[in-house]
Image (cartoon, rainbow, N blue to C red; front, side, top):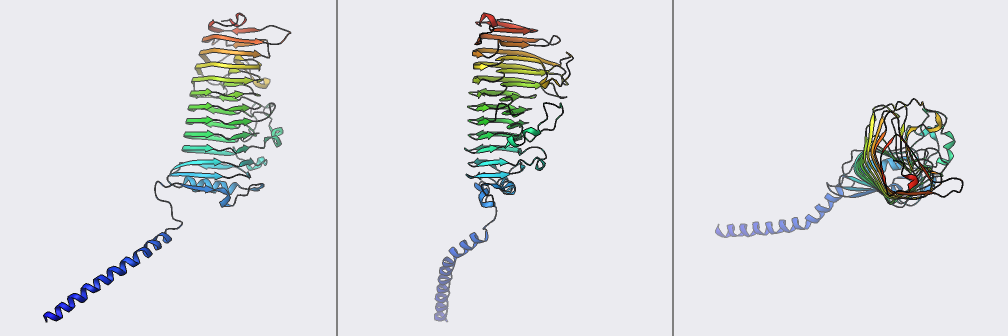
Length: 418
C-alpha cells in the first residue's frame, strides 16, 4: 500500500507539473485573445488619440462636401478621454456648417494643416459656419486656412442700408470656451466676422493672420464680447472693418504686437446698441502698428444708447501710426451709415483712458478727436507723449476735444487740447 501511495504521489506531482507547463504555454495565447476582443473598444482613461478626417471620408479636392467627416471627427475626438487630436491634413476641404459642441471627455487639439472652404450656399447656414461651444482646454493650431469664400456672397450683405439687417455667417465662433489657444492659422475672406469670441475665459490668439479686402463689408478680424482674460499677440490683420473690436462685457483684455491695416482700427465698441450690455474694463493695447487704416485706436458708443454701461481703465501705449485716418478717436456719437437716431441721450460713461507714446503720421488733419457727450463727458483722459503729425500739405495737425476732461503732457502743442 505504501508503494502504491508513493506511486500515486509521484503521479499527482507529475500531473501538476504538466498542467503548470500547459497553463504557462497557453497564457500568451489568452493575452492575445484578450487584445483581439478589445479591438475597437474605447481607449483607457488618460490615453491619447487622433481622428483624421481623410480616414473618415473627407476628400481634399475642394469640391466634395466634407461636412459629415468633420463633424464625425469632432464627435470621435470629443467623446474620448485624454488628449485627442482632430487632424485636417493638407488639401482643400469644402464644408457646410460645423457644430463642434462639448463638453468633451478630454482635451481636444484641432490640427489645421489643410484649408477649410465654407460653402457659398447661404441657405445651408442657420447661423455661423464653424461654431465651437462649451469646450474647455481647446487648441487650434497649424499653418492651414479657414476660407469663408466671402467674395461670392458679400453682395448679399445689406447692413449698410438696413439697421436690423440679416447677418451673414461668421467664420470661426468660440462660445463658452475656457482655456483656449488659436495659433498659426490664417482666416481668409469671411462672409461676416472672421472670428467671434463670446462668453469665453482665458483665450490666447497668437501668430494668426486675418485677411480680407479693405472694402469687404463687416469682415471684422476678431470680435469679442462678454469675455475675460483674452490675449491677442503677434497677429497681423487686414480687413474691411475693425481689425479688433472689443464689445460689451469684455474685461482683462491684452493686445500686443498686432499689425492692423487695412481696416477700421482697434476699437472698443460699439457700445450701447442693445439692452442689458455689460461694462468694459481693464483693456491694454501695447506695441501695435496701424497702417493706412480708417481709424487708429478708437472707442465708439451710440448716442441713442439702449443700455447704461461704463467703459473704463483703457490703456494704449507704444502705438505706431503709419498714414492712419483718425489715429486717436473717442466717438460718443457713433452712428454707422447714418441710419440710427441721434438724440443726445447717451447712457455710456467713458472714463480713465490713457494714451502714451502714440507716434507716427495721420492721413487726416485731426490726429486726435475726443468727441464726448455733453450729458456724460469723458473723464480721466490722459495723453502722454502723443506725437502724431498730419503729413498733408493742405492743412495742419490739429486736435478736437469736446466734453473731454483730463490732462496732456509731452505732446505736440497742436494736440494738447485737454
